[in-house]
Image (cartoon, rainbow, N blue to C red; front, top):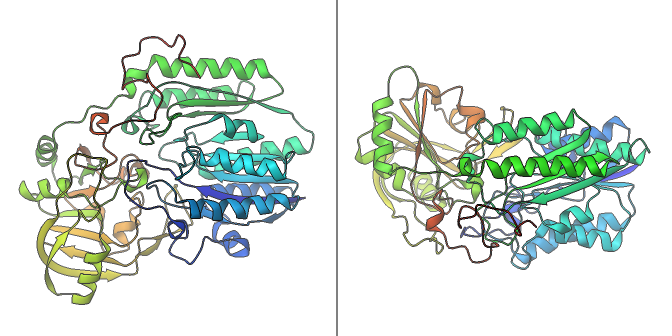
Length: 500
């Protein structure tokens, strides 16, 4: 049996100014990995490709990987990049494989298409109308009809932080391969709701998503093959942004429909619990000072500028407030500022330098812009920025921060990087000689993913409303394309006539 495994993964923040070109999908290389290189890189890792490879290996299938293209969240995907990735996958489908296993995100927006994944699947169906296709999607997928219509089976992550990427892909691939062996006949049911859950309320350790995902797993023990509740990605100003559900059963359409409707009702009934209310920044930082003790670090979470939601990773407001309130023994991850990195590398380790940090990327979607921060300090360390991921999320993969510098003001050590990367693994500090567990304070530009690696380390978490295109305050954004009315942008008390 010949199986094609491929990745086209990007979460698009349509408010982000960060450019999403082919280089962003290429992990610092000339182009995205493929073939033997990609198989070697992802075999046995906690990734979707790793899960697909395991499913194929179990039945002794021959695999080919035409492209593994994954980019950190950012602005709309450039058409040239989208066409390059699509062409590689569609060409592989046209060669007549027995099945295709696709690692997609579900929230890709391109310059030309609101639904990038649906367009890819539509093109595949043009050249391979009967090809069995299994799809693994991120929990933050914004589903469109074309995704469901052109896929054979769909599964989504059930955890946030996403520690089940490999298991999700493995499950999706296994169901498809069992169907090919005539062991089952999958059918799907899906639906969505006019609601935009705040990302800061989507964690699966928290109510209400914890309860929803628990019910998802119960349904899989009560007759469903796969159940996925997608909280959606609200920073995509597109028609179908929002929460949705996909249920896959073995030939039982009625059960699939019943489970779908139950989950949608559960989510709608708890819609108010998905709203996030930020507090003033100066209040948050002052509270962090009050919480500080010798039992462990206090984590200040700069969640308005998180690269895993498309942030520029260079806004300065939270760090500025930390400095103004006089916090000491702080380790910060991190700032994306390649120009400052080059300045500090040229100065060399031990040099005392004055820098103008951050605010290099204008954010036209926001009325208020970030301001550069003038700092004087020493270059403590210079690194190539690579380290192995060891936590449950992305375990086995090599993380690449690009050329990296640790810059110290005396009271604050700041990690300044050349490639956007989400700080979910403490290795982002440890690889640079910083022990995060020994610091009085940590500052992370993250939202929920930090929990997978840092919750065992920190004593308290203080959520800080800084500035950035990942703002948790919807009033700071102008939504022009999302369907209306939609909760909580509009006052909706009934779903009558609104369901899609």
